[in-house]
Image (tube, rainbow, N blue to C red):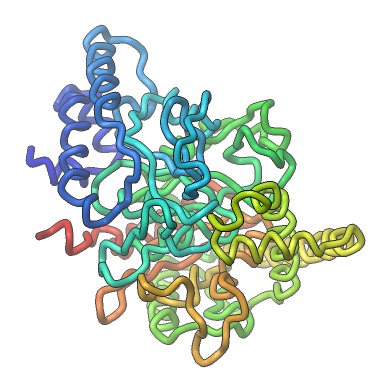
Length: 473
């Protein structure tokens, strides 16, 4: 089997080939390391490579297979971890020169679970400094471009993982999502990426164990692969005080279902946000697909403007806690937007946060009532198509000025504030060949149902099967 063909088998197919002994784990890992050697110098997706240990683990995985030992669901599958996740014995930098030599003594919980399921780590993937912003660049490793057009951004902050996945360097990727960091790069790189419900994929260690804005989760090339990753990353763990009790095995159920008569709310702009015409064009085509699936698609939206304000307050609060201790000695090593966000947090007051949380509860119930009328809410992932890789963030959309470096992500982070599960799924391409995804939002803790709808859309369209040009040269 040609290496490139093997690298672009789905994760589920790769796992089956290993179990059926059609290929060895060593063959699979070697094929992906070859792909990394070929493409990573151009794409800069993997910033710390652990090839030697990966090959050693592959040999051990083959030995376990020969002995007919019990196998994990991801036995032998190559993965890489976002450089925000701690990895035992492997450099973890958070995209910052301050931590360029930091070697953790243990794994983050998502990494631990992927390894326990048999996945083999090939290294760490690029992320913006401390995961701040949806453009993957930092002063330590540089920029990761979009594989569909090297002059454009791949999004972020899980951008390195998205690019590695889109180009066959790994079978699955992990990441985090505060304001869209799993959905945005999936959208820009023609992948599926889910922001799970709060507590669905627990994280540890975490300085803010009760914090509900940021979540961990996977990205994949297909919805079935995403469900596979969710099955091993989800489930209770008492190290996380907000972990849900539901086992990850719920994601092993069949994804196929009928959607005839399912009520779906549809909005191109979430009630008036500026959106680029090319995004609207793909959205309208996607709407037709949902109707063909039998859904009753209704133009409707919900006012979440206050959710955006709440999100920004709690983001600033979190950034201040993380960054302020570093500012005294390392201010010169921090990017301006991170400093700005931390200083915003310094200005917050207790009454401000209390009122914000009360307002958030009010909006939660407004969203809950909205989702009782509709099973799904369809809207853009991003308000823009992939922009220049040399631009830190878009300064305007459709003539509307962006006040901050994350204003262009409102269709993503308004949903973050509500805590609903949301997925980005490939929905088409611009005339110049740039990927555009759609966002499917589900009801409270309806993660599996979101995967089912995404699967139906994926099977009806097959946009995710289109590979980046760089892989075809």
